[in-house]
Amino acid sequence: MDDKEPQHQDHDLVSDAGDELKGMAKEGLAHPSTKPVLTGAAVGAIAAGLLPVVTWPVGLVAGAGFMLYKRLRP
Image (cartoon, rainbow, N blue to C red):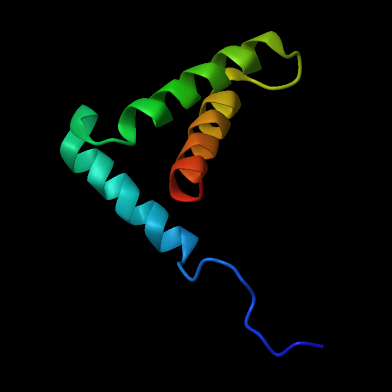
């Protein structure tokens, strides 16, 4: 077995997400992540409205969370 370190990003996801959310809160729509995250939230809410089991708030949070994750880990 090889003794190399795993080839993954050495950043902490939670602290990166916190920094990104703080930046979005301070800069508003001027922040580059705000518009994609809001779009993801809207798409998630609409998709959840079409599904019989999931409610729109769950879809909103899921869509926003997915887009935030994609902004942090492309």
